[in-house]
Image (cartoon, helix red, strand yellow):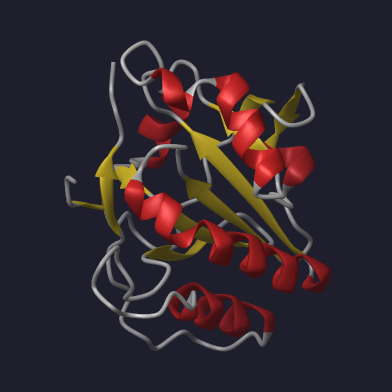
Length: 184
């Protein structure tokens, strides 16, 4: 299991725009249509990564807890499906339905969006404010597969609470760790 850290792009970076295929609704979805009134969380994930499998239930809980507060959640998979067919759109749809993802699960076929976000691993997590300015990037929490730390989502929850309360996030932002994105 590879341990690739996320790239910590500068806070204040504007979210690159996109329109991608949503494997759940089977429709094209754009960031401009999906973005939240108060903020937007973007996860780069995939089906097979043990780091993502480890946090999947928390991703669902997190979205369910914060969507009612005006935060939108978007998941994107950018993996090379020729070499990793388990991450293809049909299986993405199946996983999203099985896990009851309360957010779209978008397919980045060309990998252009992952490159625009400088995404490096799965999960790679970004929190943007209402103006799509980056306010948090990094780990969900300190839990990793087999490290014995409970999955809580505390780091992103703190970032979202700070965003919603209009207060500065003074916590250290640590890179996420996960499997590298499977580039073509």
